[in-house]
Image 1 (cartoon, helix red, strand yellow):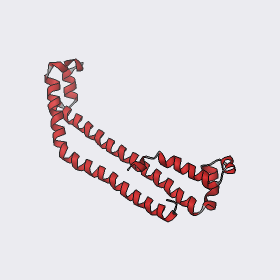
Image 2: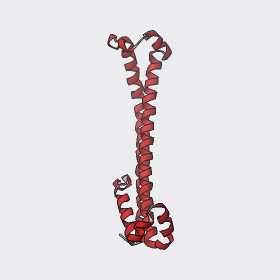
Image 3: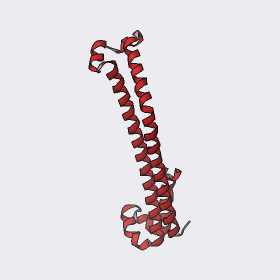
Image 4: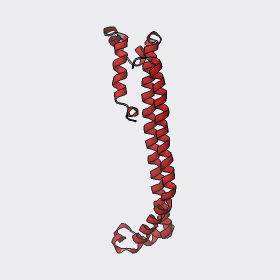
Length: 163
């Protein structure tokens, strides 16, 4: 596709579609998490009871009574472990969202750069010379070939193109 208007339109469509995927991920994680919270707290409470009552875990403690007291009792220990797991999950969802969003923006920037180069190469020449393509490369090749090579190489490696 070499029509700048078609590329622009397709890129806009891709951005909105891909960000809706990120929003869906976050929404489903939120809904699933709200249903899972009671089970997570119960699992960690059960583990805390086992941790303090089963002799198999005694080697994990230097001073078991102090650890239980400092942890807020068996219930407090279970609550702390559950809250830690929930924070970790939320952090993972946020990190994944950030990576996906960055990739989407990276892909869109490359596509819009392509639109710009197809629509107005002379307007972009000074910027590209200073930021993306060394002047020696431009002198050896035609500007369009340089920009095309760079945009194809970068866009092939973008996660945004995997959506």
